[in-house]
Structure formats: C-alpha cells, structure tokens
Image 1 (cartoon, one colour):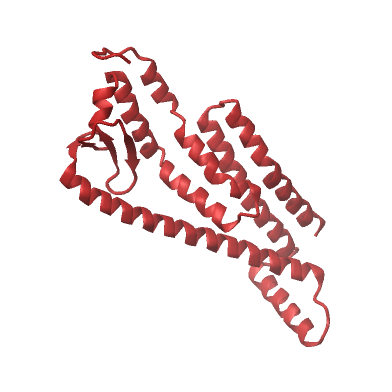
Image 2 (cartoon, helix red, strand yellow; image 1 turned 90 degrees about the horizontal axis):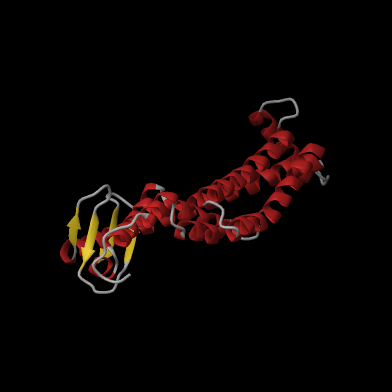
Length: 243
C-alpha cells in the first residue's frame, strides 16, 4: 500500500506541475515536436502510473481476476455483516472504478469528436465539389474564388487543403507555397486527431491540470510552423508583387 500511495503522490505532482513546465517550453519557443512529445509522455506516464498503483494493490501474490473477485466479495460480505471493509480493498476498488470510468469517458468523447469531424468533412466535401477547383497533390488542394487569403486543412478520407485565390494573388510564390505546406503538415502529423484527443481528455478529467490545459497546448503547437515549413519560408522565391 505504501508503494501504491507513493505512485499516486507522484501522479499528483506530475499532473499538477507539468502545466508550468509545458508553458515554459512554449514561452522559450522550444521545437514544437519536443513540446508535443513531452505532453504525450506526461499524459502516458500519468495513466501508466495509476495503472501501476492499481496493480500493486491488486496483485500482492495472486492473479488479477481471482484477487479482484476476492476484494469484491470481501467488501460485500463486510457490508452485509455491518463491518467496515479493509482499507486496501476499498482503495483498490475505488482506483479500479476511477480508472475505468476515466478511460470510458475519454473513449466516448473521442468517438463523438470523430463522428462530428466525419459529418463536417462530408458536408464540406459536398460543397467544395461544386464551388472549388481541385488541384492534385500529396493532399489535394481545393481552391475557392475569394480575394481574401485564407487556408485550412480538413482531415478525413480523403484529407484535403482548402485555400482561396487570395493566397496566390496576395502572397509571393514562396509564401503561398509555405502556406499550403503548413496545412499539409497538419494532415501529415495527424494534428486534428491529437486536438480531438486533447479535448476528450480535458472534458473527461477537467479537475486534473495536465488534462484541463491539453487543448491549449495542442492548439498552440499546431499553430507553429514546422521545421520543414520554416525552411520553405527562408528560400528566396521570385515575386512579382510587393511582399
């Protein structure tokens, strides 16, 4: 039990102090890939440590299924006879219930996000097939006739980039290419799925600081240009209009 409480204490420290660490990394403009990898590692460590604490409580010397049934039987029998169940049995059942509930909540939230994304993808694709001009590429680019420079990416099957004619008309050739590559980088990196996972974590466990702030870090990380895009932006390109 002492080891289990030590693991849970470690989870509390990591979940409580990691937001400050990630904020400092963002403020110092550390490579976005490093920030993202750190966030994934912290979230995974939090879940794995809770699982480890549960295993320590459940497996002093027996298999998980048999011991779990013994714990449930012990708690039920104690309550029926007006006694207080053993502390470690109650702790194990509470840990198991909390972890299972959290995993189910995250899964449900993530599936809802995927369904919403599929519906939005289907609606946009139907409209763009009428109004946009497709351009082949690693991810097709759908060009809309609009003077204001706008661009965004849409995940799904198929994934594609939406851009307006204003991107070509208002930006230099190199800058316009960088904008399109930026949006393609979001699709290559599956950033839309990461944002969905972060939102699911935040909605499922808002009382945990690490989970609550996850959407903000993912959104900031996705808004930074990746290394390949920064190289594109630094390559001189012929320009026929002022930049």
